[in-house]
Image (cartoon, rainbow, N blue to C red; front, side):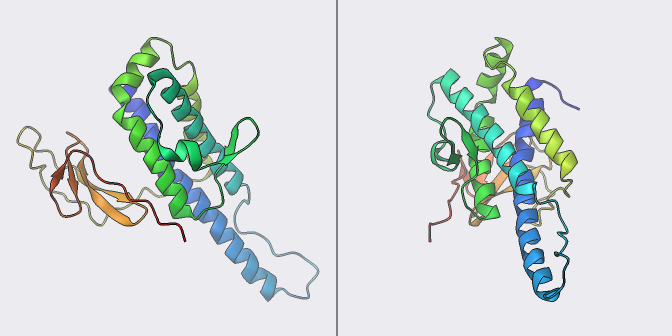
Length: 217
């Protein structure tokens, strides 16, 4: 399935934002359903039954913490500044991060996506660090968490309406793999999954797609 270690790690990193989004949406749906059931069965002796496992919130926190800890390890090993969510987009315990702060599912997705994007840009460095044994079992730990959560909370892969089934305009590429990139505000741009060329929302070539964060209320 994977040509090399970098492809293996990228596949697992790609799963994290959508998996966290999926789990946090399950939590919101559970709360809404619980509120509805509480009204409907008012006066009864039995509590309303939750349609989903309420531990989805804890599991989303656990996966996010795995991503944050991995990103911190990478920042320490490379000496590069980590993305802002690694430093501020979390619920910090006394010694270790505990999970996501109070936030909407789309905010959790945006933070996880920003961390994932930063890590993917460092894949060549990460592959070398892994080969030298400097990342220890951190990549395997993260991959195991991703697979566990995918098994515990199956989700349909996202269907991108903005997907462009046409050849990449880069002459040396030509593959039909143009896919959209989303951020907290919606469509942010497009990226070729083969050659990784990027364009902004208007279709203009860019070196890096600008990722917008949702303004605080």
